[in-house]
Length: 280
Image (cartoon, rainbow, N blue to C red; front, side):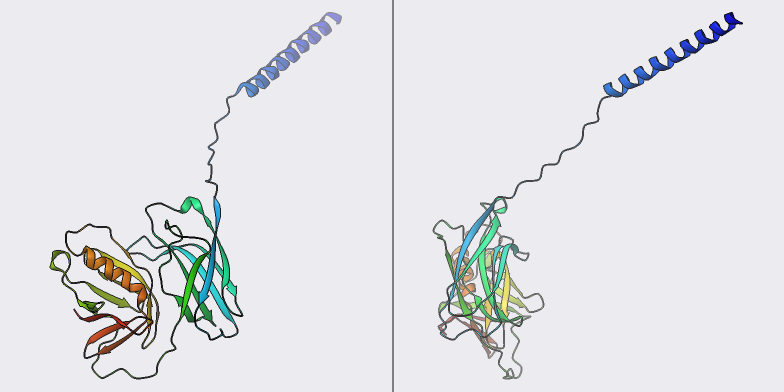
């Protein structure tokens, strides 16, 4: 009996030793098991910088209560696409200008071959009453801070009915006839410069003498309109480059218009005619 008991104890010891050895092997295997590499995605850290802007207007009339100023930094490089807003600030305003505004933008998103513009508007109950009309590139070599942005008042809508059988501003392709009082000649390939207004998308587009262009129709009433800085394709031409530079430079000066005898006349803020067009 004692002999059998010793055999049982011996067998049990062997089994326990085997189990302990297996456990040690399992632990060692667990420790030594190679870890799978994990993908690490590093997000580019924003390099935020301030852009100081001073908004002014020369109109002596005070703004009505509830006026809201909006200032935006836009990428206007793409000729056939809307501008891209990089930074925007809005504020309730009262009293006389200047109105200081700080736009914080990510410097990593600024590219040397792109064009940028700072645009300002004033609205009352979502109705546009003032807007900037000149292109302001804050990254131009001669730009200084605070960047001064000037607002011009948008004339209220007129209730006068259009003349009978007169075309509307939006829709037709308007061929450029004169610019700064000079008759223009066809551009590259013998093609005439023209502009087309689209009230549905609030945009303008056309051919400027060498390249196609696209811009924003920022405001329009029965007699007034404001066109933002236009972006264009970058083709070089033997002909039409001088015309193109003058035409694109004139667009932000558009302030009012009239259509008489199928001739579209565009005036600046001084009521000087800067361009005339006819239906193409």
